[in-house]
Length: 222
Ligand SMILES: [Cu+2]
Image (cartoon, rainbow, N blue to C red; front, side, top):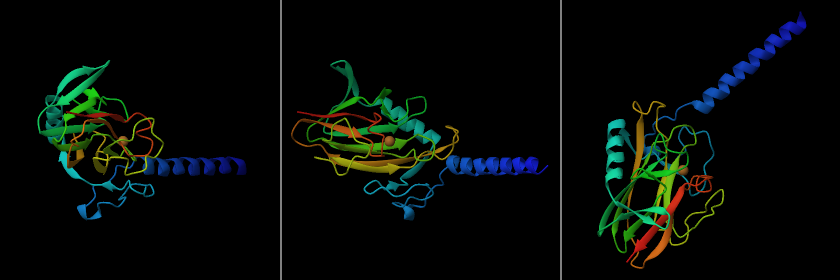
């Protein structure tokens, strides 16, 4: 009799604990007021120096789709060895990057329907770069840094990296599991490409992400 109750109590504790843990793990992050930008908000993790997130701008699914459509339209695809090379011509370029577009592999960037493509721009070009985080789940923050740090990457990439051109903050994941019902965070940054041609890399600064393959080549051409 006592043993039976003991088992029942153990089950209650086990299942109750599991539910509490599950709720904690799968709780959707709440939108942060802009005043709390730079804090870790509702995310259950300690701050990572140099890797503080931004709430960014919140857009609905239709705006996110327009963003993806623009990303698919802009630039021209050629080949670079065996790999696709996405070229942006002109002295003023707009680059729309997507972090983990639904239907694409985890820990990747997408644009022009390509995964982590090599990107080429002209030297001295004025660049407006935007990043939309379409990923879902706690800890699925993504940012973007362009600089001379080349792969293989360590678990944590110490910032700023050598010849860093731009650093976009970590952006929170989408708010709802449903892709169509969700809102998405978006960030924008501007920089001027160096006058001297060279090979740079873009990568995500979230710990483990660049190491897991979230990066691509960023080429400055004459
Ligand atoms: Cu990432």
